[in-house]
Figure 1 (cartoon, one colour):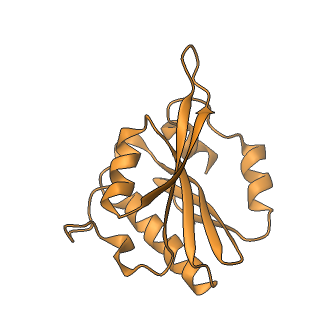
Figure 2 (cartoon, rainbow, N blue to C red):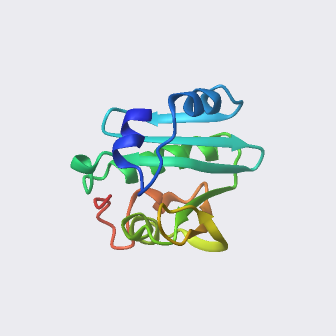
Length: 147
């Protein structure tokens, strides 16, 4: 998981093995994926959160991230979560395009959240969607292949 995240980190510091181990030991944590793409999330009460979603650069635009988001949404809904949240850097155009295409909606903005080496910090956009939304695995055009 840490290796995939390190290769795909946007654009700064990847999480360490110790950080992943601590998160994986936490109650409600869900890890999905393989050596190509990974998702780490947490389900607690009526909400779920995507903590990290990473795809190796050579594996992008093959539907892997889309599939992981759909699998996490299904797991969250089955566990009783009504809503899923995630944060994305405002300057991460590819990720924002993926989430927009899947119908995630902006619910908040955290100014200066992501530190950038040698530059101004980037805002975090807080996005949400319903956990039981059947459209999670397909784009608004219905073809389901663009992550």
